[in-house]
Image (cartoon, rainbow, N blue to C red; front, side, top):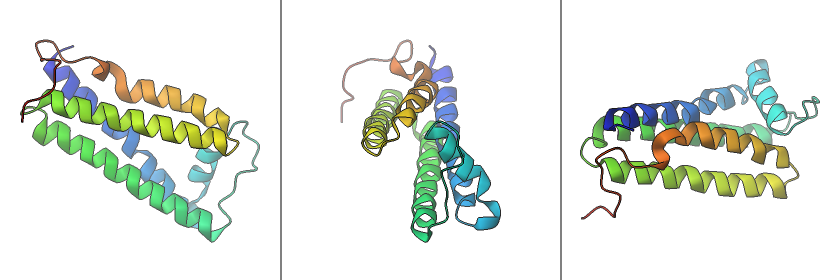
Length: 147
């Protein structure tokens, strides 16, 4: 993979992660909650309508999650735009470890909470978010960055 393709893929990763933010924000208000409710219902397969956002606590938690996800997506976009050219391997590794950390904790929590199906969906999101970032770009050193 080339440097430019990695930079492009970082923006794909940013959109994949950040796109959940607005969807979850909509879940904070009864009139616009259906996209978020459906997303959660799908991620806790099977789609059965049992997932609701009726509780104020659930709406608050989804607001927090949406904010974090949008912020994380914007951060990755900014790293791709402003930092990647100066420290491509450091940015790649930072994003990779962040996504892997999300995957492990989110999947473990999903399983522990009785929503193991979400761990399977997480594999798809992991593969899409990571794409070619598993490997350093052509010509990039694979060792630790020097400070």
